[in-house]
Amino acid sequence: MFLFLDECTMPPLSHVDTHHKALGLNLDTTIFGSFAEIGAGQEVARWFLRVGGASGTVAKTISAYDKEVSDHLYGVGTRYVSKQRLQAMLDIEWKQLLAQLHSTRGADTKFFSFVDTVSARNFAGTNDCHGWVGLRFLMEPGGPPHDIILHVNLRDPSNTQQQEAVGILGVNLIHAAYHAVASAEQFLNSVFEGLQLERLEIDCLDFKGPAFASWDYEETHALLVVGGYADAVVFPVDKILLPPNELLYKRSMVMEPGRFDIVSQLHANLIRDTLAQLSKDELATSKGGIGLFCLSISVANPDEKQVKTKQIVDCVERLRAQGYGVMLFRAEQLYSMTAYANRYTKSRIHFAISLSVLMRVFEDRYKDLPGTLLEGIARLFTQNVMLAVFPMAAEELRARVQTSGITGWKWAETDGVITADNLHPPGALDSLYQYLLKSGFIAPVKPGISK
Image (cartoon, rainbow, N blue to C red; front, side, top):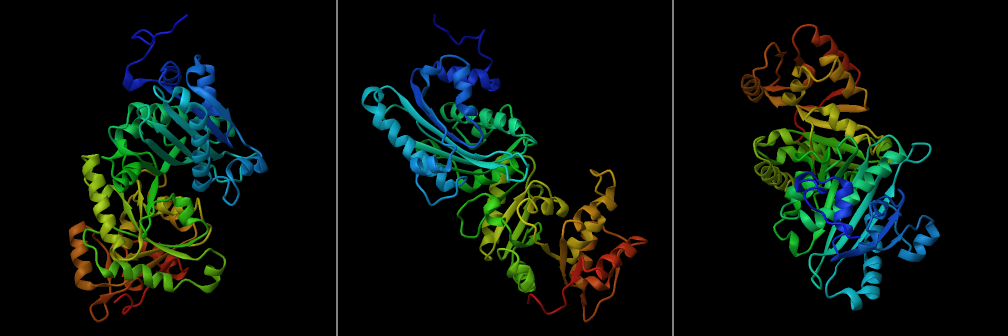
């Protein structure tokens, strides 16, 4: 009996569910490949095996859970959940697939090798739930190979739900590789069908092959946040893209948030001087200090994703030229940035900010929080945070206040300069502000630094 995918059995292409994607691939006699999955079950291969017609797609499926077995198959010397391990898996599985099948099927088959190495939730719930997912595939029989490599964070609360999410992601990835690579946005939309950011995020995406010639690496990286596929991504100063967990892990962080309409050496000096003030004890108990500029997607044009990603990448380039990497966040509140960083480090988070940014922290009404201003302030300062606040020229601060519409603040100036300890919010808010100053949560930086 033959099965045909017609209008009665197949939803419209823009709304194809996981079942129909797997079945459609199984019934495409030109697509054939192997699966190697470690750490979250054989959830991707399972889809192809259970929807019917699996012999049309599945050449082999393997799962090397035991570390010694994994080392025997893919070599030693790398962490088991790492890009290096995934790359070794991809290279070896691809080589074996072609050696076994190219001579008999190569003339009319678009081969693929799907691999993943995943750390799903352990029994105690103490591990970082993340993984690497990779696909090598041919767009046409005998053509050049293409690679797609993703780093994913699993956000479901249970191991079973995380396994399910990995299965959907894998089927979506294979289907998108053959049907949705005209643009990075089309590809990511296809990969996330049936998934939400609450379940899974992609915070690093690598690709190569002629089918991706029109994709820009850094614009695609920015699109992960702009398109809602990740809470944050990082643009390291050396331009080697990697997931935030690898850059931030156990680091003492100095973050400088801002709009950065104009970028100058002063911005880099704020990070440099704050890093220089980190205590020896703090550095000794971490993996060292790191400084990053912080952008929010709200700083760019909200009307057009393509314009927004171009603007972000342009700003990233200007900031990296100052000697530090950049983090791009979906949210603009400092407490959200801190909560994200605390996924990967327990060391103190230092914000290097100007007086005008400090004033915005206290002016924000935090309407998205039930406790409004008090809850927003509490969320920020209960996360092991310190604000290193740099002085401003009185003339510049007056101009910023007038432009932003802030009213009621008072200050005293010395030689035309205002420092955080000479600043006073309006009304009763000043009592809270003075408490944070005296408790060391807000640390005024004296004039003369960062010149």
